[in-house]
Image (cartoon, rainbow, N blue to C red; front, side, top):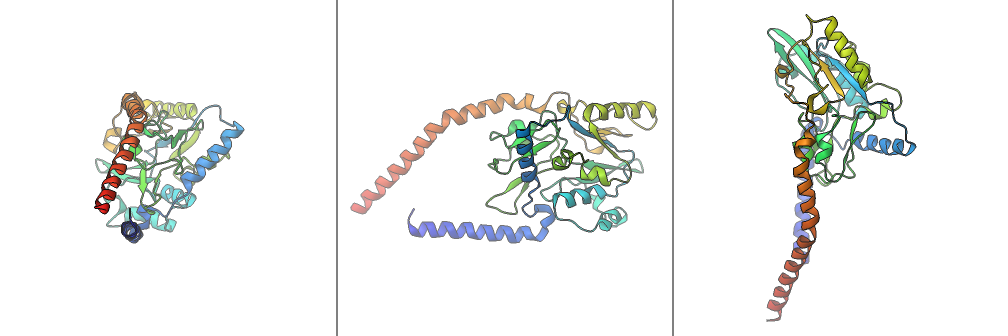
Length: 321
C-alpha cells in the first residue's frame, strides 16, 4: 500500500466512524452509549472464580404473568442499574395508558435496553410479558462462540466478555429467544449486550434490580429448585388461574428464568421448544467449523502471503520496465 492508498483508507474509516456515530446519536436508547455492564460483570465473575466461591445450586427468577400490570418499573430499574439510557420512572408507569402506546408493537431487547415488557391479549384481557435473557442451563450463545466470550456461571447467569468477542454475531443467530443485541455506538469496537441477571447484585446477596422494584409481586428470586417447587405449588393450588405448564423448566434443556401463566405460552410470544438443549443440534456443525479453522488456517495464511508476494513482484517488474 502506498501513501496515497493509505490516506484514502484512513479517510474512509474516519468518515464511516463519524457517519456511524452521528446516525446512532439520533436514538441512543437503541444503540446504547458504550455500556459497561457486561464487561463489569465478567470481571466480577473472574475475580469470584479465583476465590472459588459458588452457590450450592444456581439461582432462578420465577415470573407470574397473571400478576403483571404493565407498569414497566422493571425496565426502568434495569436501565438505572446497568446505566443504560433512561427516562423518569413516571414516564414508564404512565406509558401503558398513553395513545399511541409503547405497547402498540411487540418489542425486543436491544443494545440500550436489556429487558422489555410487551402486551398481548387473551380475548379482551391484556397480558403483560417481561422479556430478557433466559439464562439457559446449556446456552446456545456459549456453544456458538468459538472464542469463549460467553460463560454459564454456577450462579445461573450467562455472562459475556466484550474483551474476548470478535464480533461474529453467531450468538445472535443461535439464541432461540432472540436476545443478544449488537451495539453499534462505536463502529471500531462494537459489542454484544444482554441481561446479566444482575450478577453483580446476586453475588452480594441482593436480588436482581427488576425483581427488587416490582411492586406487583410478579417475580420471585431464589435457588432454581425452590422456584420450580413454588411454581408447581402455585399452579396446583390455583388450577382455575394457571395453565399446567412452567415455561423454562424443560424448554431448550431448562432455563434460569421460569414463567407461569393463565394463557398458553405460544400465544404470548414464547417459542415452542422441546427438551433438547440447542447446543445438541449445533455441536456437530460447530465442531466442523473449528476443525476447518485449524486445518485451513495455515494454507490460507500461506496463500495470502503467496498472492501478496506475487503481486508485489509483478509491480516491481513493471516499474523496472
